[in-house]
Image 1 (tube, helix red, strand yellow):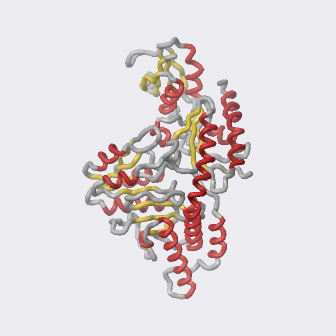
Image 2: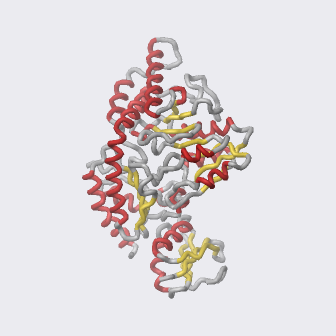
Length: 370
Length: 81
């Protein structure tokens, strides 16, 4: 009955996360750097979370850091690679469709060059490599998959062909749901995207990669982060990640069927285009745009019928600018809806959604006389 | 309309928010003949993306962007059907 179809913005808390949080919150208060019993307990929990996360992601425990958010992991991952390369260059080369958090961090730091892609949102590999090969490039940023349209990016191919320039991968949209691609130098994830608590990010830095903190240091357990770790939340995030990885084949297969149902229903609407790669994509999200429809009105009309969805239309953004992802793809930016099915979204919920969609869209078009 | 020339019909959509410039464009299309050019003057930042997308979805020809006399962006479309 929930009608929550915005799991691509935030996944509801996984039952394992809830359970772990409840039990850990009593014990994880002490400062993990101290030497007494309570501190040792917190330190053990933090180390356990790191080991669990490393195992779930197929990386080494010393490659894992926990940050205060996914965005902070992006900042530290991207800018830490950049800072370590300051003698080689200062420019960040990135796909045009990267998350705004990556774009903001890159522009904040210095010069940038963005590289376009095709109509599905996939980056132009030759263009990216060409830009990366010019002098003065510090780091290349390429996401694992696009957060708005679901299209997977050719991270492993780009990584294999990059020579001497490190690659940062924003893996927030896919972490836990899909294996990490190969070849990144640093990567970022965000707990609330896989069903862990918000306020926990994962920063991965490959062993042997040069990384220098772009921000003031702190004297913590982990030199790549600052501040007192939220140990219970980190532990809950790690437990949820482990659970999500264990069940992902079954969950993804179910989500693909649900998303295919929404894709087909949206494609059947008049003057509507479904955007993003239809096959080589994340399992849980789909985006479409309806001509002549106000995106904000569409979100409100669906909300009034019990369905929570996101939108990349300008009228729904704080800046009143349309989604730079849709714009870079040449897709229609108004009347846009992003549906993200959650782990427990049912076929019944999706059927109810696709049943109301045509009348909602037709009603909004009738209001403008089309 | 030749490059830089006057369109056959120009719509003033200054101050209108998306999707209204594209709604006005769709409504006005029957007012020009096939082969003629219809232009939309729009201040909304989405128009730059949505006028070409509308042309693609509706099978019309996107001619390009220039500026109106007051400097506002103007997007030209040739009616093909």
